[in-house]
Length: 338
Image 1: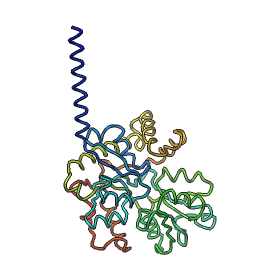
Image 2: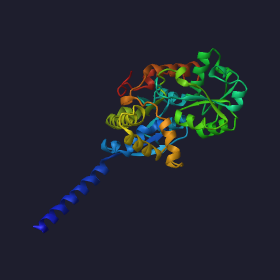
Image 3: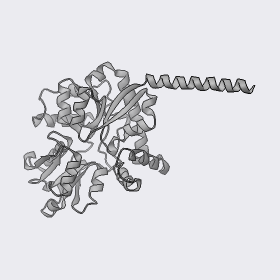
Image 4: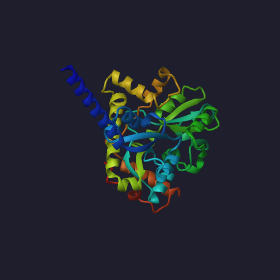
């Protein structure tokens, strides 16, 4: 009897092992572009909690330091899916038929801390007390045509001065902008809260405003893929978005709505810490991760009006071709808009 049980157990174990190997081999290998920011948490959660694997996707992350290089990587096929802000580079690639926006990720929302406008102490002491005082000052951006460039434009527009009244400083990488602000080589910048709240602890940096006061319901980041993937791999796209959305829902429940309880919040911060501020001890990183908890769009819904406003600005500034339309940029077959 014992021998029969052991033999049965052995056969069952062997079958389970074979099935697991087959399942692993059947999973589609994809590369996902990301920044090491709290706002990219949906991907990290979907990966760590097995949502991607359950969807039949074998995910590998490729990390970037700015939005436009990620768009180029998507177009070239080096990365399959990207999560980042709309940029001039992304729009121009969409105009060439290379990429498509397929969903929304990060959105400015009333009642939830969003992107913050910062000033160096030197500039603050010289009169840059509010965003209305930005005229005549320098502003850090990664590249011309980046989301940082767009945010500064919206400040200028509302305060009644020209974009040309701001001295834009393209510094290519987030780390370079942070260094320039700390050493007071630039006067101002606007960035997501997990970075901003950490920076204002520095005696040389001051909080002077909020982006939500200038761009209500701003669709900060999007999900995008290559046009080839959008057209020829619809099931892969749907599987990715479904798993990604589950990760976003877990994040919102734990750190934004705080409906999942304290234990879930701690688990979420621990998970994110593997990717964000991983070079710092947990007790040092946790407050910054929690501070960066902005709303992630439910079901990867996309704020079409916000994307259209961004597209129109890029065209007005001559940063993208004037004939690029929303249909070229967004694939409506995947997008649930609001």
